[in-house]
Image (cartoon, rainbow over all chains, first blue to last red; front, side):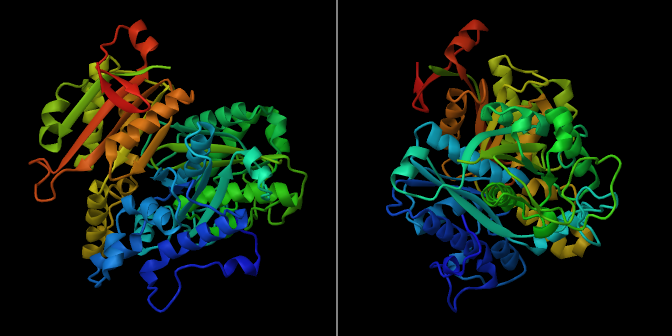
Length: 346
Length: 197
């Protein structure tokens, strides 16, 4: 995990004159894995596994080739989605279980959840897990065709919200059994308390209007955490800024948390970072962990006018001091894919 | 916990239309944008049919776990080639969602009303990886049954109608559950590996 500390930015990554714009996907992934591994103080990585969430993979290389570019061989070899986890695992000498997960915009959350299960089941001792995706013409044309992009600012939960803003990034965490982490003196950011994935079985691109799948995922993750509805102190919403997502998500939170929903700060960090597809869930899980550690809720920016149908506390425009012991991150994506993860303080 | 396989299918894209005829009218009436989604639905449907799980609308106990290899790259190539040919007008809003591999599994969930877990892994060694993960999900209590399988690019030189793609799925569940509902047991699983019985 990374906090803004310049020392981490000096972590060894694939920099140099041969780094092309088409290398950005793996450059971001390499950098984030390096930072997470360095932050965790992992010595022998051979026992650690890797779980990577991504939707499009190294799409910039494919895009370049299809546009007539003469990609070097290393790019052609790494164009396929199937290459992502094997390449990163080999590069970072991660010898444990290794897989890529591609569950649309829930990929990052599912990658962390699946990694946690590898440890719970005893199949791995340590997992490096997260998500990555790069901004591309490919993604831009697709979301444009679906009329999902805003032409102004991304305004999650605002009455005048008009769509999402694309983003990019990579975010990884290091997961391990608590006893092992304590024994080797690692800094522990928090615990994974619950994780669940559920399908809407409704529509390919639109969320179920009442958030059937997301409510089921959130309810199950909460159940696994052993917390009551008043045990969640912050919710990092999927919060894309589209009309239907934000309305659906508000209904989901009210359905799962009942009257308590009105007392829980809910924010969309996509208002500041954009929607980074496969990286989003991992970024937002880390936002929850940092919110717990800093006792501060990140805001929903660009929030100007309240929507009567979105009537929760969306932490408008300014971060807020708040004692957070447990937080939930929600993710949803194409195909009615929904995930929820609950993290808690040590 | 002993896990068993109670349904299985292996279908080439050349046989997809023929296999579709064995499924319920509701599934036959679905409209498909790409042949890969039809293949995914048909292959999963045939495995469910063999297992006696043809219709389970609203079932949140059945998880879908699917692997996919470079077959997904064909959809991406097709979508972006269209966009390059005709600019934004060529960027198909119908095809774009299928560039995300999970939407193929999502069509299975929509066709059969399955609201359990859904996980898609782009992998080269398809079935063994997915079956191990699916078995782990049942053993961990995250699903009671699993539709587990993969879609594969079988032969790049073939057209779709000639068998460019293939898909295979198995139904995995606890032996006790299979015996209770009288399902035929094809194989047992040991440490996530299929064993003959």
